[in-house]
Image 1 (cartoon, rainbow, N blue to C red):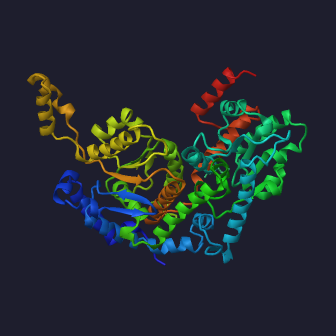
Image 2: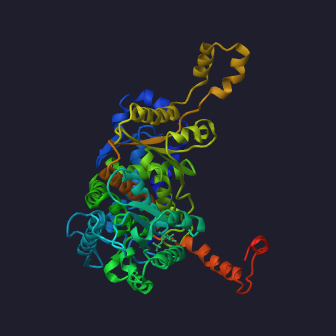
Image 3: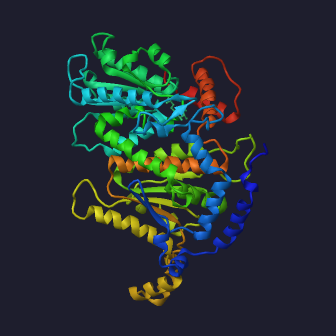
Amino acid sequence: MSRYVIQHTPVWQALIRHHREAADWHMRDLFARQPDRFARFSLTAAGLRLDYSKNRINEETIALLCQLAQAARLPQQMQAMRAGAPINYSEQRAALHVALRHPEQEGYTVVGQAVMPQVHAVREQMRVLVDAVRAGQWRGYGGATITDVVNIGIGGSDLGPRMVVEALQAPEAPGPRVHFLSNIDPEQLHRVLSGLNPARTLFIVVSKSFTTLETRLNAEAARTWLLAAAPDESAIAQHFVAVSSNLTAVQAFGIAPAQTFAMWDWVGGRYSVWSAVGLSVALAIGMDAFDAFLAGGHAMDDHFFNAPLAENMPVLLGLMGIWYNTFFKAHTHAVMPYVHGLRSLPAHLQQLDMESNGKRIGSHGERLGFDTGPIIWGDVGVNVQHAFFQLLHQGTRLIPADFIVCVNSLHEHGLHQDHLFANGVAQTEALMRGKTREEARLELQQSGVDDATAQRLLPHKVFPGNQPSNTLLLDALTPAALGALLALYEHKVFVQGVIWGINSFDQWGVEYGKQLAQAVMAELQGQGEGEHDASTQGLLAWHRQLRQS
Ligand SMILES: O=P(O)(O)OC[C@H]1O[C@H](O)[C@H](O)[C@@H](O)[C@@H]1O
């Protein structure tokens, strides 16, 4: 089989030529020339609305990008994912997170084995625990009900559940308070535990591998903390549950099989919030709301697997990302949720996108000759406008961005929600239109400043515009809408990985630092000296000077 190199396909070359033209376009002109631009470049899927008209694209751009997707065999790869094929080829695993939100008892297999019965069995096990805790039937060692849940996990075992809990748990709603312990900074451990009552706290140790150092250290610290208060070790069964694919290691840690929720090697950590990794979410919002979250994700899967490429929301987002990242050489992609509940979405997407597509090696081991995964960043609106938006408006870089806005809030507070919406949408308009020299001059004249001041200020008042954005519009931040939104981004990342020809489902790049940390730690503990560069040696020497024994 000849090596597939996307860069050498005729459509890639056609896109390079098309980009030379597009580089001169201003979106203001595109809108002026095409009054029905919004109708042409917007769509609805799984309850989400996407306006992608404020992009440096025309029909030809979309047509060429769809051809690129065909050349990369995207439709076939989508089917391979669905069929449970080992698309994570470096680890010989399927990537079947879509099965986790599939409602039926059948539909997905891995190596010929049906997976849905296991998925539904674990979901039932979750329901039993969640209902018992929320109804006050699950009791701690002194017979008291559970008021606080601590999710101990890191990476995919932390970011997804943390973000979803923040988004969906209303403070006044019934259900335990949920806390997240991820880092090995003793400060975090102290802060999380210090406000809690051991007799009323349930720990969920979440680790797919159950070998992650941070999680094991934190779980051990939590166990010690609990046992310092509890009468005996039998309390572990009332206060610790685990979520893992490594059931043997869980048992060795001291958590019984009955308290253990399985996950599988065909679920990547950053795609796992839909599994029992989402137990903290289900405890926070209840199992019915968790089911609605899964249903939202499934509705997006249905759309993704069935809509034609040019009308497919994740595909379009993925393709436009490639347009900017690879052809315009934009290095970053910003995500701005104008939704307080989604303030941790950028952090979740950083792991999802950058751990999936932050790679330079193609499927044949070759070094790819173009830019792949962008730097994902962003924060919550309106706050961002008063912080870093200056750079988007008048800096020197091209920064494509996603704006996420809600029409309705779950809380009524006068005009807050409309102001929030207005600001989000106005930013996309300002970024697209910019302000010409003429417009700025007129504005200065009308402001009544003298001519000399107007002359001096004029260059500073011009906005180049032409900054692209997608607007994702939600009715309100419901479990179903959030499910659809997360699944949308997961598929977007997959689409890009397929087109760039990389494996989005492994993460070898995170291992090296862990390896070296073990060696450095051994030295800190006085177990020999390693060979280091002068900088690392110097830092270790400073540590020896300052460390209080
Ligand atoms: O769930 P765990 O096995 O504890 O892994 C937690 C995290 O750590 C790893 O280093 C990976 O980079 C992440 O993809 C993973 O989510």
